[in-house]
Length: 421
Ligand code: NIG
Ligand code: FE
Image: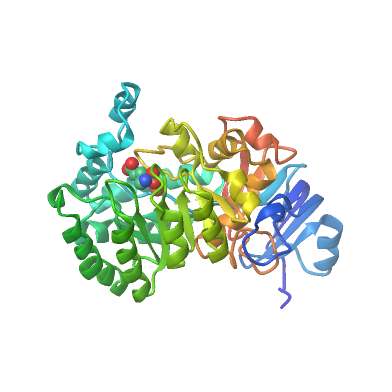
C-alpha cells in the first residue's frame, strides 16, 4: 500500500548499500553482493522504507506525495543500520585487572578457574541494583548507536541464580522499551557454573533446566537460549540437555561453540538446529559442514580473538568457501571483548579474518539480522523493512574498515527518526 506522504527523504547519497534482492542469509559469493547503488535515495514513511535505490527511480516512485522532511546526505555512504547479534550488554563492574594478569601470561580459562573472569562479573552483577545495571547498560547502548548499531542482541548469564538472571533480563526489557535501539533478548543461565555449585555442575544444569528456563519462558523475558559449551564450563552433553529443554519450551537456540577447544560444538549446533553458533575458532571442517547443511549461521567475533591474543582467528574464509553464512559481532562483554564498536570489529574482520569490506558489511547487516531472527524486518534497505540507516563520513565501503580506530558515523536513523546527528 502506498503511503499518503513521505515523512523523510534521504537524498544525494553517494554510495547506497541496500543489501537487497534476496531472501535469507547470504552465503559464499552472495556475501560480496551488497546491492550497491551510486547516486541513491531512500524514502521513508511511518518508520518504514517506501523505496530505496537510484535517486531518479525513488523520486519517480513517490511522485505526487508530499515530502515532510528532506535530508541531504551530501554524497555520503549510506548503509542499513548495523546489527550486533551477540552481546553481553547488561552486567555490573569492569575487569581491567585482567588486562594486567593477561600480560603476565595468565589465560582466560585460568582466570576463570581461579574464580575470576565471568565469575567476578557475576559477583558485581548480583551486587548491583536493577537501576544501576540499567544505567550502565544504557550508556553502552548509546555508544553502540553512536557507532552505527540499530538492533542489538543481549544475553543474560551474569546472574546465575533465578532471581539474578530475571533481574538482568528485566533490564534488557526495560532498555528495549526506552532506548531507540531494538533489543533481542537471550537467556544464558548456562554461561558459567557459579561458585556455589563448584564441582556440582550437574546440579546447576538441573537448576537451569527445571527452574530457570520455565520461569524465563513464563515471564516472556527471552526469545533465545544460549550455552557456553567449553572445556571446564559446560560439556557437549550438558549443553545438549539444556538446548533440548529450551527447544521443548519454544526458545530459539544459540551456542558458544568451539571457541578455545574443538569439542564438537559446531556439530552440536547443527544437531540441535541452532539459529547460530558463535566464536568457532577451533571448529573443524566437519563441524562447519554440519553447520552449513543445517543452515546454522556462524557468528564470528574477531574483537574477542584479538583481545584474548589468540594465535589464530575464526576461519571465516573457509566458512565462506564452504557456504556457511557468516555474521559478525562485537561480543561486547567486560572480559573477553570490552568494546561496543562494530567499526573496530570491521577492521579486525578484514585484517585478521581476511574478509573483504563487502563481506564485512553483509555480515553486520543482513546476516546478523538473520542470526537473531530479524531478517524479515531489518538488515537491508527494502520496501516494508524498518527505516534503520547509517550515514557514514565515507565515500565507499572500504574506507570505513580501512581508516581504523575512529568513528565514521555522521547520522543514524532508527525507524525513520534521526537518533544520532
Ligand atoms: O562470549 N565465552 C563466553 N562468554 C563471553 C565472555 C564473558 C566474560 O568473560 O565475561 C564471550 O566471550
Ligand atoms: Fe559471548
